[in-house]
Amino acid sequence: MSLGFSVDALLPKARGGGQLRMGLVKLEERDWLQPAPDLAARTQGFAEWPQGVQLTPEVEAPGSELAAMLAVPGALPEAALAVHEDLCLLTKAEGEEVYRLIGAAVAWPSDWYPAEKIGLPLRALHAPIAGYEEQLATGVDRFMATLRPGPIYARCNWFIAATGERRWLPDRPPHEAFAHVTPENAGETLFVRSERQTLRRLPQTGAILFAIGIYVEPLGRLSPANIAMLAQAAQNLVAGEGDRRGAPAYADSLIAYAQRNAA
Image 1 (cartoon, helix red, strand yellow):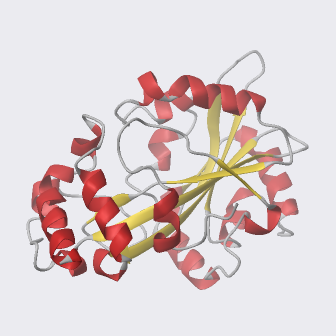
Image 2 (image 1 turned 90 degrees about the vertical axis):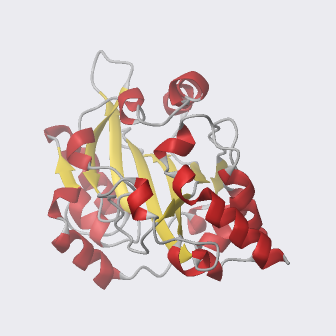
């Protein structure tokens, strides 16, 4: 199965609210990474935000293995410059059962700072996500433990942002960020982000690569079906998750826009 490489293609495969789930699909190698990355944008992204690269000593070997897989000289930072996706590596320390983030090369984060996450185990990495511990943590741990080299798995999600920038680091509370949004202008002022996430185990070092491809479009450029899905999903987010995403600040405008769009 191929997830596609655009917001419109990804949204039908994303969770539309309700209980958290991994929602993984298996990809062929040819569908792993964006086939035509804008490498100039990648170079600019890391130049503008160098703190997106965070490395521990443990990442040297898997980072070099990954770069070699991509036919790129260097290690994790150079690999991330050569692809559309942001790249994170996780592994288990000897004597531990939990996977930790040992390296991140992230130009376009969705509301997170690699410097705050480096070295943390999976459950701590996902702690801000409402419902993760209760609904998803055990399944994710089991998946990571049993993932074999070779297969590639993927999933996607969505967020609503008040900016179309690929690097999304909200600096205002939602009621301020979305204050200008109305049912009339929501198509131009609400931006839909989707992360195309893939997971695979490196064959030599055994580290797990988590790759995140970021895609952003104004709400109004999406298909009517996707707009309707987002309006419905905004009403059905897990308790607490909607608050974290700022949904109360934009949901009414999104829903009204979708209704007008369908009329």
